[in-house]
Length: 474
Image 1 (tube, one colour):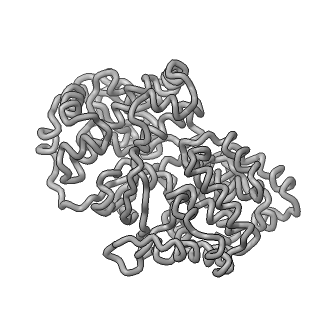
Image 2 (cartoon, helix red, strand yellow; image 1 turned 180 degrees about the vertical axis):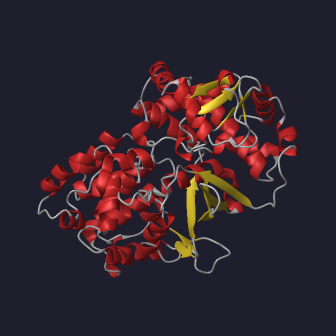
Image 3 (tube, one colour; image 1 turned 180 degrees about the horizontal axis):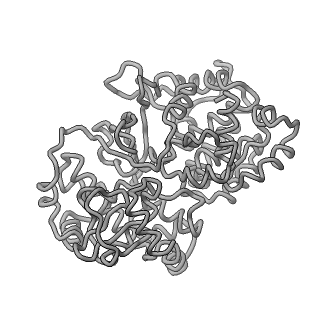
């Protein structure tokens, strides 16, 4: 896009461009999202950036009204470089402390990472890391009543003084001054997560409801609830619950987080964005899918709260119905007995992490009629995850992870593609061997389905969702 194209998009306040670029206003030193409802500045006073980090690198401060930290990000297919995208995901998930650890996680030198990251985002990874921490700190200062010293710790700053120094340097206010200028909060931890419309929330909610694990998940009215567990950067376990509901007036989902998860808010937000596919590009997808996506309702590919949970669902779902698979998955949750306290009687346990699953004996599974072959597959996956040899989230490299899965005994293309689609959020994964895909495409082999699906590249995961929807089998 040229400068005049960016400016026309700015004039329209079109939510489809939200997060695709930011505008820096030279007369005020503020940068905004294209949906910002303040008076549109003249074109002569506008500079356009493809990331918030790049805008801040040029000395612009975030707008208090449109809040750039809430803008949706980019889908996997939008990333200029896969490795740079993986690095950005690790930063957003608060999984790394510095660029040394970041490069080590990705298996490359710092110099190589810096070069690729600069090409993709226009800034060094160290600057991107600092910007993400500051924007998350701004979110916590605005939307919660957490003490400033806790916020500094939770977003990754080494000390409160370091946090104050960086915040004052970039935003011209101390954290305390910023909070005084923000609206008063109720004390509940509620966050708004933006997306590019349209979003078919009813379909996404229906998908979750059909697959709700007893005691772990529930749907009530228009909201999705679930218990969660995750490890922080130091390996400490945090448990709690979340709820996600739509907003009737804005293109946002409202996320409520239990107090027990306050130390891992950045990770929770990143996971929920992935779970609900909030960085999706509906326009690009609808254009690529053509008639298949009509009506263009904004279907999302449901993601994963935890990669191992989806692996369990995928393995248990091999050659059985959704209902039968759900029964087995629910049985595993009950056997693990990972209890969690919540204010909802329907939510009383969390799904076992990989390390929890490994504590269950083969005898226990046999006694509850869970097939030994599938248990063996899941033990292999769980061991690889615990040992750090298999990553099943958006920071993973798709080609190598897909091939790694295929090499495991009992994992075929359907299972590997399903995991890639939901855990790795790879938008071009296709379930050619899926029973319903073959039936609804009126073919008998996976190869025939794959041939038809070539027209939908690089968004074949979304093609899967539309085919399932059109066949009413989701």
